[in-house]
Image 1: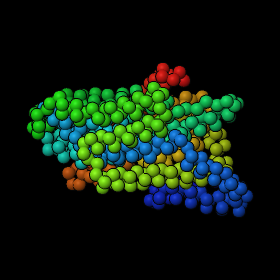
Image 2 (image 1 turned 120 degrees about the vertical axis):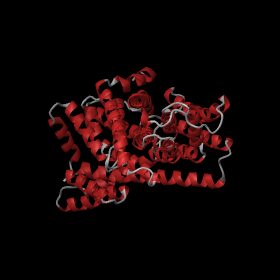
Image 3 (image 1 turned 60 degrees about the vertical axis):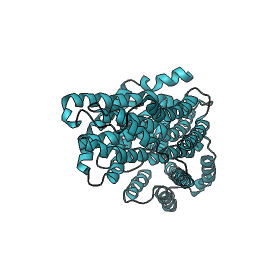
Image 4 (image 1 turned 180 degrees about the vertical axis):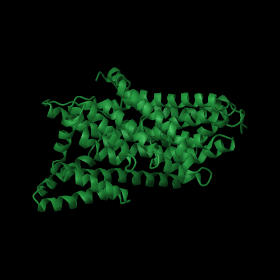
Amino acid sequence: MALLLFAIICLVLMLGYPVALTLGGVAFLFAVVASFFGAFDMGLFGLLPNRIYGIINNEILMAVPLFVFMGVVLEKSRIAEQLLTTMSDLFGRLRGGLIFSVFLVGMLLAASTGIVGATVVTMGLMSLPTLLKRGYSPEFSAGAICATGTLGQIIPPSIALVLLGDVLSNAYQQAQLKMGIFNPKSVSVGDLFAGALIPGLMLVALYVLYTLVRLWRHPQDFGSEVADVREPISISRVVSALLPPLVLILLVLGSILTGIATPTEAASVGAAGALLIAIGKRQLSMLALKEVMQSTVKITSMVFLILIGASVFSLVFRGLGGEELIHELFMAMPGGVVGAMLLVMAVIFLLGFILDFIEITFVVVPLVAPILLAMGLDPVWLGIMIAMNLQTSFLTPPFGFALFYLRGVTGDTVSSGQIYRGVIPFVVLQLVMLLLLSLWPGLATWLPSVLYGN
C-alpha cells in the first residue's frame, strides 16, 4: 500500500495538480481509506502538529527566504545585465569569447542567486540574442545557457543545499540511532557548502574544456573572430561590474565556511548586502522593492507549504510500513550499498523529469537517506551526489525544467529541438562529473574535513 501511495501521488503530479496539496491531500485520503481496512492508525496524525511546529521553528530553514530575497534583489537591480554586458565586451574580441563570458557570469549568478529559473531566464533574455546575432550556433548557445543556469543547484550558497542540509541532518541522526549511537552527530549546511565547492568549480572547468575542444574542432559554431564592442573597456568598468557581486559572495560564503556565521546569519548579511548594492546603483525604487518582497513571499510560501505536505505524506508512508519496505529492498539489492546507491540515483534522476528539486528533497530523500547512511555512506558525499544528480535532471530532455525556462523566453528564434540537441553534451559532462564524484568521494569530503575536521 505504501508503494501504491507513492505511485498514485506521482501520477496525480504528472496531471498537473499543485504539489503541496497533492502530497498532503492524497496521503490523507489514502490514510482514511487504509484505516477502514486496519492498515493505518489514524492516531499517528497526533504527531503532525509537532512536526509542523518544528518546520516553522527551524532556524536553518530561515535561511531560505533570506537567500531568495538576496537573489531576487540582485536580479531586479540589473547586476546581471551590467555584468554580462561588461564581460561580453571584454571577451567579445576573441572567437568564442561570448560563451566564456556566459560561463563566468552564470557562475557568479549561481553563487549570488541560487535560483535556476531566474538565472536561465535572465541569461536567455540578455545573452542569447547577442550570441545568435554574432553567428554562434543556436544549439550550442542554448545548451550553454541552460547548463550554466543549473549551476545554481550545486555552487554554494545554494537554496537546494540549504534544504538538503536540513533533511540530511535529520536523516543522519536517525541512521546513527539505528546503529546504536545515542549521542548522534549532525551534518551542517556549511559542510554541504564546503563539499559542493570543488565539484561545482570542476563542473565549470569541464564546460570550459569542452568549449575549447569544440572551438578547435568546429570553429564555425562560434561566429566571427572579432565582435563589435559597444564601449571601451576600462579597468574601472570591469571592477565596477565584478566587485559588488564578488564581495557579496565572499562575505556570505566565506563567513559560512570559516564558521564566523551560521547559514541563516550569513543569508541575512547577503540580503542586506544585496540591498546596499541595489541602492548604490540607484536601482531600488519602492515599486521594485514591492516586487522583490512579493516574489520572496511567494517562493518561500511555496517551499514551506510543500514541506508541510511532504510531512503528511511521510507520516502516512511510514505508517503504512513503507520505511521497512525500502530497508528490506535495499538490503536485498545485489551489490549491497553500491547497488542501493545506484537504485536511488536512478530513481532521483527519473523523478527529476516530473518533480522539482524541492519535492524530491522533501519527499524522496527523507525516505532513502537514513537507510543509505546507516549502510555507512558519508552524509556530505551523499548530499553532493544527490544535488549533482538533481542538477542533471534539470537539463535532460524532454522534461528538464531549465529547457522549459529557456523555451519560454526564446520565442521563434530557437526551436525546442535545437535546445534539446544543445543540452545533450552538457548532460554528458554532468554525468561525467557524477561518475568522478562516485569514484573519488574525496572531491566532496576533503574540504569539509580540512575546514571542520569532520
